[in-house]
Length: 580
Image 1 (cartoon, rainbow, N blue to C red):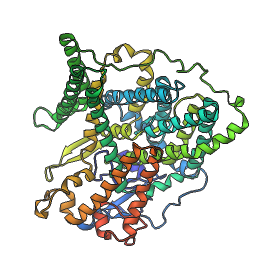
Image 2 (image 1 turned 90 degrees about the vertical axis):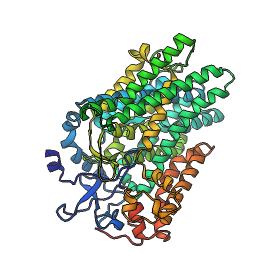
Image 3 (image 1 turned 180 degrees about the vertical axis):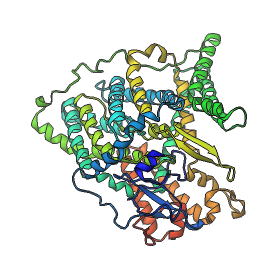
Image 4 (image 1 turned 90 degrees about the horizontal axis):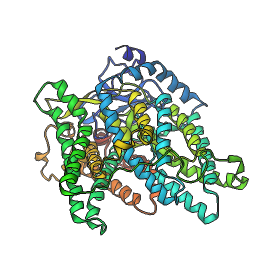
């Protein structure tokens, strides 16, 4: 195609796990496509692609890299300029690709998946900040920041939203302000401004190059954690109703039934595209709208129970207006803040910057490495705009936002076309619609939810959304190689391993497979414990630590280079690393 001629790249066709994860971001390797077959992923700050060389089965995942690896930091604005040069020729195509029914289905699906968490985070903020921030601020930040990001960023497949770690940080900042007698909004605004400056420094110096030290080990473990969180939290919300003295057991049972009907409908309709019945085009179209149809089925079933059996389900709640939650102006008076508070805020900013840096870059990396994406990533350009959005939301007293892992990867998966590989029986990606229309329209609808859509949205029971979120978690688990290996760890006889699995055909040893998987399980367990502990603020740092853990595994000789090449990817720190 003309796009491939412009970029001069090899098409990405990586092994996909559930959340669209694949090869680690790598400096560009200058290898001719005529010499070997390749798959690969967009490179940090470049229009070219890293490649994964297809060789003998036992070394099937050797990542070919250039001898001149990118430095951690580069000359000012170099990374941003490279990103602009790579993405500017593709800007019009970003809109052309999105004119399809698949994009429409993605918008409807993501609208429900993004709006409900925004309202939930708003409720948490209202409680944590004694009414200083709420759902109105979260919705406005998501809508305004999301629209700006969709139009201006380099990688529009990433979706901005408020995240749990940022909400936790905001709660701690408020508690500190109360304890020290500091004005919250003034401190919040200046903390955000200093954070914006730090993120701008990161963008200008191309410091996002650090993500090249992450591999599939990080991708798969983090993706599994996110999928498990969605399933567990969705189920917990329904289960806890049975232990709530203010909720009758009958209502709890009715809510569980509605959630199960919604979940079952989504799974059944989604699987219809994999059935042999009917024309393929119609099956795919119906499957794309599966989550939206399931919401409709769940709402209808809930209304049936309410009309015939007197159930009164908790419904989605939206703010009454666009007014601030607290009695305050939308723009903070920065000059009125005492100088000592301005300086003290600078001490709190680095922690906030780390949270945003990790959430943004890990999520963007997962998106850029999704199988089927052809267009290059733009880490530094994306960080540039995130820094400006952070400054704007800080001045307006809105929650900080960044690329949300769940929303972003779900966005990619909703725009992915797949087909069944007859030789292995596994699904393979045939293409991805890479567009700016879906995040643009999605965030416009989220902004309009308060103004125009409230009469309709307040009719949706929360138990319907619980079923939808559980579906999100299950869908995220599909294809996750780490989770597939967890089930394979239960096998005791090597002869009983699935014959068509890529790891088996590649020559994986059952003992080595178990040892590598157990290492990931331990990391997953530690992160799960920390996220629910008082040390939850350290959660993004633990995600970053997955990279060093994998590096140590290579340097300490826990696995041979051949084993790492098969189970993961090699990095330049591995003792047996071989350059392209």
